[in-house]
Length: 254
Image 1: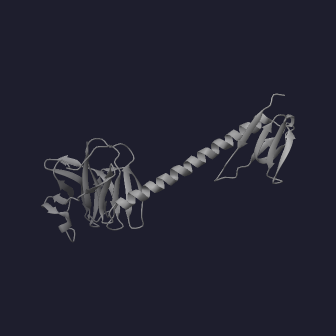
Image 2: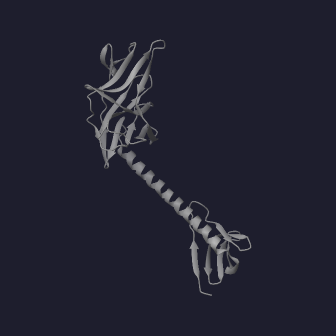
Image 3: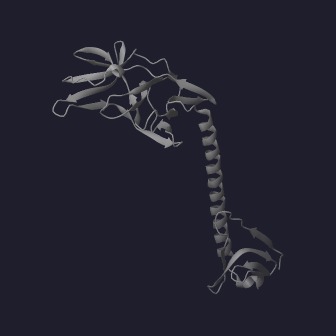
């Protein structure tokens, strides 16, 4: 018989490296590895924790090799996923170390930190315009108002359509990416309607669907849009619904 030597060693760091050595009579041995040498099969028995031998004529090698190959592929896939997870965790830790702990919006561009400056919003209604942060308590103005920021275009240009931002919250509040509506001299962040009976504000922003990942217990989040953004004006907004306490960082996609 032509001498055949097959050595198959499986290493499964995350899962047990056991598989079946199938017999032609329908039975099997649970093994860790095996070697085919000529007309003999040498294998390590899991049941008896020792090496044993059998004639190759009794072994269903085709079925055994198929299962061993499938198990090896599973192992390699698991190893790769584990390695990728470790690499992602290292990358996340490196990113966090580059982000200041001061509340604000940040980006990493080619490894360099970019700091965004928040813009001062105003409320525009029939009474005119007034700085939003100067309204305490909020005025009871019937009808519709607009929260605006100055200028038709942001000076903060972002040259990718799915940008990633790091948002360090000042408090445990909501946040989102709004699409802004440019008008003459201003950009509308959102429209606001006062509900007279309950004296509450109903807000109507154009929100972008985002993914978010919390990176620390002190309110550091990584956020990015779920879908590519079209060329337009946007803002990352930190706010408490109904309170009109917006903090706004604007940008535009080019």
